[in-house]
Length: 241
Length: 283
Image (cartoon, rainbow over all chains, first blue to last red):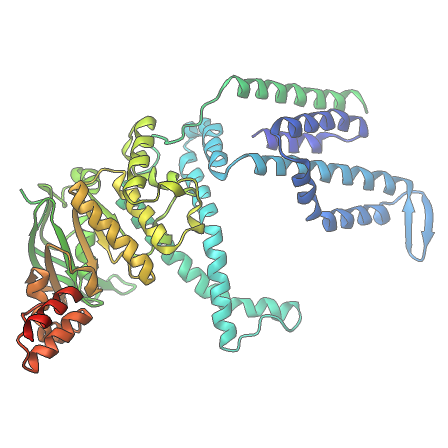
């Protein structure tokens, strides 16, 4: 939940000053989480391409007074400004969310979601079911990946071609892959539902938790800090135009 | 009192077309009556489509009988109010280990059953520890199920059922998707549970060598129970088994053929040691 607020806060910020509290906040979180810095840098590597692409786009495509121009491209003052701005924003986004995934197990995540959204039960939103679906989906990702690989190899063995041709041809060649994948996914879902029922699953009511999610004093402090941070960001946005 | 009892149990799969008209009826289980006493190790044998899996599912109240009755520990499976008690009494392990593991960590999966039953957290931890120790998977409690071998996954599934403290476990071809080592692991674990914990076991399989140590064997074919008896009795009827498209363990078959050729060997030899001993006596 905190991560979500942080991400939203990044979009609220419109100027450089707004990033100062964000930077402080992020640095503090990184420090507390004890995630080695190397890990975060490694996570950044994956998005370098995306990052540079967006920087380039912003650099060249933002209209404004041209500083340097060659051929049809021109770099404007505003372009540089937005490019740097976007780069910082993206970096912060990635670091912020990777900290969450590095420190929280998927189960804690779904548990937290279930609890955090618990108030929605009042308006008949099936929160428990959604959380359960999420955790099952997470559990089945590696299994389905494996299955895709298997089907692909089986079809390649019978002469299917997934690699040549243009994009449209490639996409078309995926259709015979998707059909068996869906069938097997449905079969798995059926089996799983039966296994869950056999083990007495009957929805969220009357269930206990093996690892109940308990909020300690720390969590309360974390929430307060988070709210303070949010207030600062909003204040900065309103005050400095 | 019997832990599982069926009387004139019949189950039909009804196929319907789009307009809900009955297209055809397949009788999967036909007029089966059997009873299982607490603590017994029962094996149900049969080739594909003989109705053995359907029979298993009626015991766990996943399927309801079309005709006849199933009692689990005295509870009628047709009675909706008994449903959850029945599922807690007769746990079920399925064929594909991947499709029955719900948790992302071994211990969380084992805790799933008790969580559903509403057992308090501390008690769940105790049960999880106990069950994992029983199947010898305690060292893997923090592992991800995706990284385990088939046999290990299946033992985790068994632990998941054990954590519900059932009186009876129904295993529906638990070894069909495993390699020989995995099969041995699982079968040994099941036998240990039967002997040490006194849990009733109903093992459904088509591997002959897995039933050698069972107390009683039922052989099913096209929905009927064709044979019933101790493994020794069953295996002495090699020709009948072959007619039902079932094979006997290698040792038994060798002994059977030797006997046919005139050696004075006893019927229903089950282990290599037995055969060696009998052969020594022959000389």
